[in-house]
Image: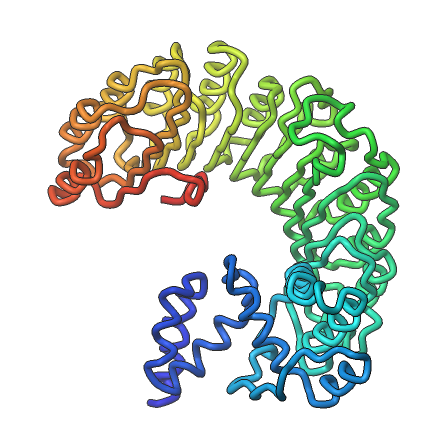
Amino acid sequence: MPKLNRDILYLIFEKFQNDDKTLYPFLSVNKTWCEIIIPILWRNPWKYLINGNENLLLNVIISHLSEESINNLKIQGIDLFTSLPQKPLFNYICFCKHLDLSVISTMVYSHYSSKYTNNIPIIRSEIFNLFINENIKVTHLYLPRSDYQIHLVPGAKHCFSELTFLRCNSKSNNNFLTGLAEICQSIKELEITIEARNNGYGITKLIDSSKKLINVRLIVNHMMFGCIFPTSNSDFPNIDDEFHIKLENSLMKHANTIQYFKIAIPPVTRILSSLVNLRELELSFSVQSMKLDNLENISLPNLRFLKSNVFQFNILRNLIVNTNRSLTKISVNIVPHNVIDNNCIIQAIYQNCPNLMYLKLLFMMGNMSELEQLLINCQYLNGIYFLVLNLFDLDELFEKLTKLSPYNLFKFKFNIISCEPIKLESLKLFFDNWKSRNPMLLQIDKTGCADLIDFIEEYKSEGIIKKFNKLNENNFEDFEW
């Protein structure tokens, strides 16, 4: 029974692995609870960092340094402690499955650079050795934009032998990436930040060595190209086309296994056409005047989730049409050129996505009739994120929602863009007409009512609203309520 109880507790606490505020109070309940929760919290300690507690985490980390390491640092004139540190109650570092060398490097530099400017690499190396050795196996590795050759650290082969996730930079050390390719073929998720003037042969070798690459994200550091919001090809002047082609060709070798793909720069090959088993696609480049020849006439028959910032509406429309009616989630995050373009997108959705469950889209004056058809034809809709523009008639919108919403639709987000905030009277009409339907989950960006919370609470007590949040920078996720 004690074993069963411990296992059950572990399963319960696992549900709160992303909620440290809930887990922390449980640490003091008893020894058993503490022993179960500590490994969960230390699996990825970096994600709990907020301003002000970096030094606290760093102090816990360096408390694991052996006396030999401390003496070695002292010989080189580095004294990290006023007295020998008290050894921690747990070997916290052995629980780490996520190793974020970027965060460690930043913490070390911030904490010690004023006193030990010339010795930062020495301190950093000692701390890296705590995480990279024969006693630890990490599954997630986050590399900084640096020249670190951590594959030479004793124990690296063992430490990275079961790596499943890697975040790196196109300028990460090629020797390390090549070395990693020799010891690790288990990477399933890969995130690469692309910068100017790459050769990146280490990345392509790493991709080639992976046996089952499933999730790929190609990010662009626009600041490295001297622009924040690219608008044409000339805003990517220093990207090495040869490297870009080699990168995409390497990824195409995994066309049968890649299911999730995010790309922040227009592709230079027909890579998307090759990803026949793709389930999620995110096109996160919003380039208005760029040629996108390699995105034309693409067919992705297994695509379930499409997220796009692409301005070329003909390309977006064709992507929706050529998915074999498989899309269940669509998120479009751009302002259309005109009402006609937007109507074409809405038409493409309700004519080709009968199984659609979630939609994020901007609505303008003149889109109301197409919205009606969307509500009628997409009967599996569960949530809609409305981006509302150009004095859209909110009263008419709410009326259509109450009359035409399919039975399963009860999740709503309203982000009001450049028009008047939602009025209390409009919300009252909407809520009153929603009675006898599924209680709604609601998020609103703006309202003109200071008494909104009290107003919402009244309808929550009546069972019309189940949950309410104000949209802000912390909860702008497309399909999370």
